[in-house]
Length: 289
Image 1 (cartoon, rainbow, N blue to C red):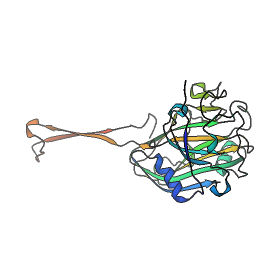
Image 2: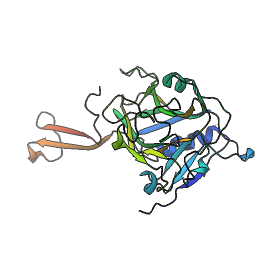
Image 3: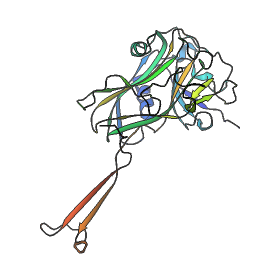
Image 4: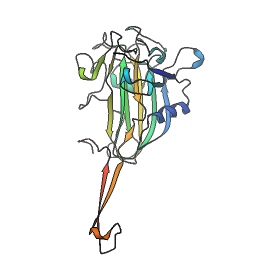
């Protein structure tokens, strides 16, 4: 099997404009984003040390995602070729408080993209891939590099999300992590690349997965995408999110039926009955409110 090399465009400095550029890159339909910011350490082009965030392209063969954004605890420039199982970039940087609290261990070299959004419909979703060089040697260890998609409600929406991680194993409430998705656990969602057969650095990665949540249309929410090393600065990890995959269900069709039909398309008061059918393009999953 031939795998084409992934393309990369690094981003530096971590300006508000670059944060908004990444957030808007994700938007498909039915979602409006604003107030984008970076959290954690953002690489600086002047140091010559590489970049820990940017855009990727030509990712179909290696990731199952055509293009989008990438955040890393290491240097994204190391991505195109698998150079072995110990790729490490130590930014000598701190972690993320929320991520540290959830994993129960200190995080390092963390980077996050945070933005507010308003959905048009009652459901949101986007596609992503998680990969790491902690695979396969450190599965089950404390060096369980982590990422999360934290959803927070900014309005009274009936859900009251407060940093709810929506990066879940399909059909479960378990988060996607090295210890939860690997060669022996939830292996149907895992791709092994320890041999380097796929032209990309992570020694292991998930298949393309969906992150999703029920929401209230026209309410305000905050999404924080964050990744970090756990327990030390060694061995890099990456999260890839597909461009234009961040969508909210909207009305895809409105049909009108008149009775009697002889009245045509004109509704006359007291003389005609009209029925309206509204169709959602992507209804909320069962169990959503």
